[in-house]
Amino acid sequence: MTSHLVPTLDPQAATRLLSRSRPSTRSSWLCEEIAQRMLSRLDWMNQLPARWLHWEPVWGGLAAHEQLLKKIPKARAWVDSSSGADLTRTQALGRPSWAFWRGGTPVWTAESGTVDMLWANQSLHLQADPMATFQKWKQALSAQGYVLFSSLGPDTLKELRAVYAKQGWPDAMHAYTDMHDWGDMLVEAGFAEPVMDMETLTLTYASAERLIADLRDYGGNAARQRFQGLRGKQWRAQLIDAIEADVPRTHDGQLQVTVEVIYGHAIKPELKVPMQGTTHVALTDMRAMLGQTPKKSA
Image (cartoon, rainbow, N blue to C red; front, side):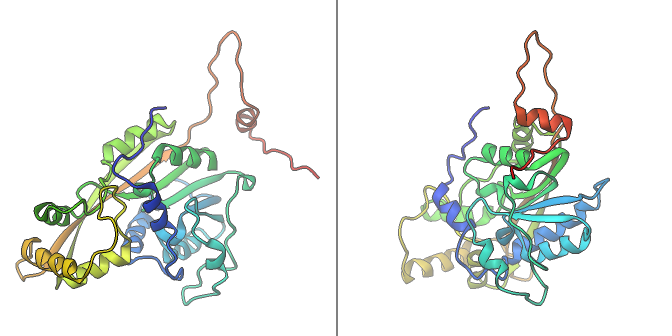
C-alpha cells in the first residue's frame, strides 16, 4: 500500500492530545455532540452488532459510550486506546451520574477475537499514519463487520486559520483530510462499500475568550509548524484582538466559526483467495474463511 502519512501532523503532539491526562470522567462537548449525530446513523444499519469495539472512547465520548450500551444492550462491548489513554484508571473511577463503564467494559486485545462493529468518533484526523489505523480496524472486524467513524474536515475553523495567516503566525492546526480522500484510502486499505457524507456546523460565541476556552476544552494544536514553546500574555492579548477584529459575525454580533464534520461507514468484505497454480494462504486468513477461532492452549 502507498504511504499516507499526514505531512502537516506532528505524531507526538497528536498522541499527547489523545492520551492527555485531563480528568477522564468526561469528553469534550464537541466530541459528544458529534457522537450524538453518529448515534442517529446507527439506526440506518440493517443489523445491530452482537459484539462491538469503541476506539479511543475517552477522547471520542464517554457519555456516548453509555448511550451505545443502552442502545444495543445485548451486545458485548470492548474499548481500545491505541494512543495509550489510561482506560484502567477511567474504569476505576466508579459510577458517575451517567454510569459510565456500567459493570466495567473490558479492554480489547487480539485475543478477544473479532467484532461486528468498530465505533471511532473524532480520532481518525489525529492519526499520523491513517492507513496503519485502517489495518488495525480491519484486524479487529469480522468478515462483513463494519466501521462507523467521524473526523474533522478541511473547512474546520477556516476563520481561525485566516486570522493566523493574516498575523503571519504558524499554522493554527494541521491540515485535515478531505471526505473523498478518506473514501479512496478505505478502498485501498481493503474495505468495501465506503459511504461518506459531511455536514457543516456553525458555532457562535459572544466573545473571543469564550471561543478560546472551547478550543482548549477540545484539545490543542498538533501541527508540525505550530509555535514552539509557550506564548505569553502579550501574545494572548494579540490573539484575542485579532479574533474580535477578523472572525466573521452573525447579524446580532456573535462571532461565528465553521466545523466541518465527516462521517464514514465501510464494510470488511469476505476474504477471497485468488485462484492460481499454487496458492499460499496464511493460517489466520484460512481460519477467518472457515469461521474458526484459534484454540487457546491449556
